[in-house]
Image (cartoon, rainbow, N blue to C red; front, side):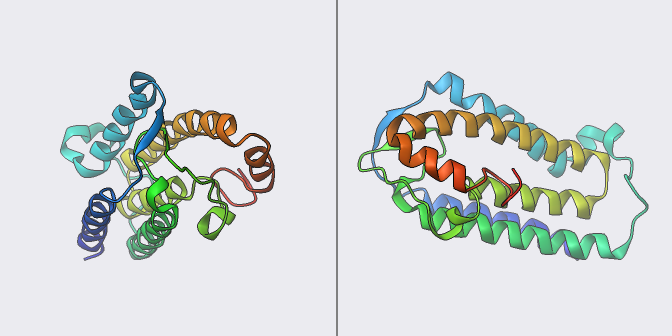
Length: 186
């Protein structure tokens, strides 16, 4: 039951994400596409690890013995993570892009979910991926979350360099106050 609910939550997230991608500001500056897209392949591998267990059968070994609480807690994390990422995406509004860009009239958003993490969309997605991995309970889930985290961390570096160039001390002050991914920690 929980696995179907998790799948449904991810499908709903994709539909919401696609719908929101239409209403964004025009791009003013873009980081080199070859450089910024290097995170897409690792993310695709992470998704494949979670979605297609038959492709990665050696990694299907259980991490710990199966317990009913894992699926329940996993589903809860998926819902919380997806909700947090959607809240952050809505809050970012027209400044959002799947690529590393600055928009015409780009604003530095520092309130709402951006009070808790500088990159709350990635935080939410990583929470949801962790919930999916917990519900699965196999090594492939842990590896998928680790791959996604590394891909997001690389992309964060590109985004932060661009934002520091654009917003200077204002961004430096924000980065000093608010952690990148995990509130109060990292």
